[in-house]
Image (cartoon, rainbow, N blue to C red):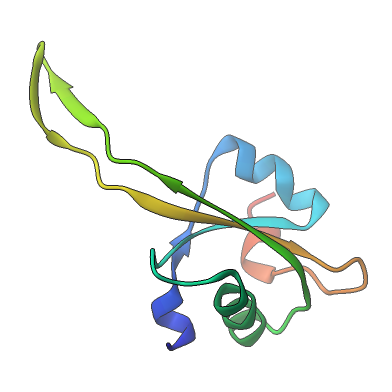
Length: 97
């Protein structure tokens, strides 16, 4: 699978911002991708050395509008990528912190 199909987008939240200093970066990834594929995709796209990858799948939840359920949020797979100590940081995220 291609790197740009594995990593869908960066995940930007308060918790993700606080992890940037520790060289932990959050991404929304393809649901069928493995940790090894995510590691190779990040290394290829950003030119960094990945130490570890943690993943979690967020289940879909009902959307409530005025007491009624009018659909569901989509389920996503999140990846938290930790870089090695001697690796350079990802430039995109460094501009945010």
